[in-house]
Length: 184
Image (cartoon, rainbow, N blue to C red; front, side):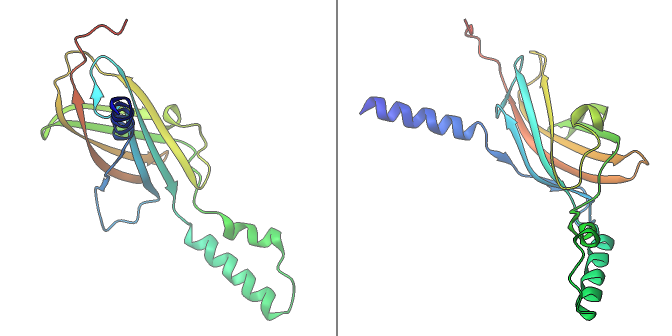
């Protein structure tokens, strides 16, 4: 009985350490070209002195002009009783725009007080060009052992190579103390 309870507790710990994080967009009314599907932090909470991985699953939005062009092409082929030319309809299957470069601006606040800012080349965080559709931006970083534990907010803005804002969002995360027990 105790062994089953221990296994169940370990399972709960594992599941809770990889839960998805809630995301808030900077401007709820804006239609961003890149939307965030999920943010996962491993481990959660982040442990000072240990590597932490931030995985951000995102997708580029549908290009309305391409979908419209595809709809017009289908209408024309149907109107003229012609089979739809697959090559002509490929444009309508594009689920977003590719990203060929740009930057990611990261701002971190500790209990609302700005404590860190960095700007990174988007192509350092994900392989470029970022194809239209789904992609994952992943970053692993080890926080110094003197990083204070507590609640943090990370705000991220992604811009293309022309400095056009593709997305802007924030999420909360926690940092805990590194265990005083040796990992040996």
